[in-house]
Image (tube, rainbow, N blue to C red):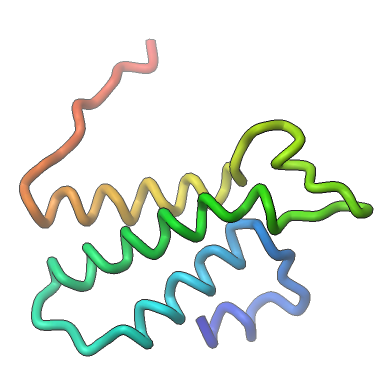
Length: 101
């Protein structure tokens, strides 16, 4: 979280940067953890919640653009997929892979 703030001078709320920052900060605040699985379970829970809040947080010219479109921030969604994948791997439950073709 702290390094994220230092790297981006003016992070926009409701985007990948704010979701990563807030999820990492809360993860650190909840610790210490007894195992990697516990870290990943907590991180996944926090990141999923932060992602769900992006439509309410991203405001452009006074308009909640993600909410209007009925979507979440795509960059934040990608980050959450990574966290979720690590968590699922830690408990031996990998999702079925899809062939994009």
